Image (tube, rainbow, N blue to C red; front, side, top):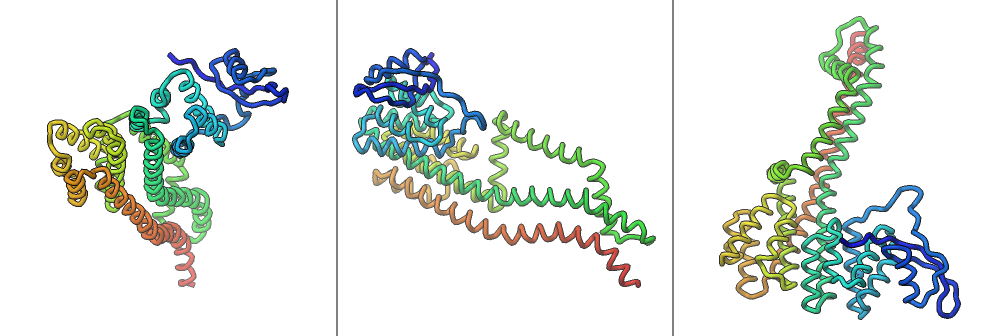
Length: 402
């Protein structure tokens, strides 16, 4: 089992007698001092780097990983040795948690591990696809080229995820705000009008009585309503994290939602094509690549179809025929793959398919946002306007009688 690496801050004197300070990563303080002496530095003070007083560690995001891979590709393409590249990229990173991760990888590589095996020790940040491609690059002697392809892949997939989140977040946020505003009106504003109406001595309009009834229910059971919503959200997230069957049903259901389902379908095709193109161009055998591709599609329907295609291609079936048998890919995608197989440029054709569908997702997100804005404004107008009309309707009727 690998030792846990720790970041130490140090002060020392270099060979010229100049007092300097910095940071280093090692398993313990003695090894940190030994590493400094190996570099020609006489350590005066070495201690563990203190943890931040507030906020704790900053989270490592997929964007941080993509930037790290891009920087490593750039460094190695410029002829900088691997270990020195880790040092430069790690020390220069703004995220302390990412800096610590990079320096741990550097320590593992200095200890004799390969780049791929060092990454494999951090599965929370590097998936099998990245590890396999890095391993292929090390074996083929083209690591900088593979790192460039991996970085491009990560950047494009993260961009695609951001677009999907953008399309989903906007309407969800508006619905939450609308619910909160409505709850505030029902709990605090409507009761004020209710007290006023009690002095009218006349029957209230049906619509006003209906709103007052809802308000009284909210006032009596607001704790149950908000508690129920919180419990439902918690239960949903837990079921999604722990139940593969629930995630599968959710994925299948999401594809049936009008407009949104088509957006998710195109995003899954784009991820399938981008991942397979990246792995195939790296020299990973098709059947072996399909395992990683299945996990990268992001949807149970496409993941299951990819695994069936893997079994068919392993039995000798052409990829185009396996895709046609799966019945989840559009004819255009199948035809592009067929051309790629016949011309020996499958990775290039898959890359073009990915580019096309990524652009389609981009256009759909922009169109969906433009379509949702007037619909959301109308929804808010109906909800809030309906409450206002319900409260002022008795006053209007009273004025008409007078």
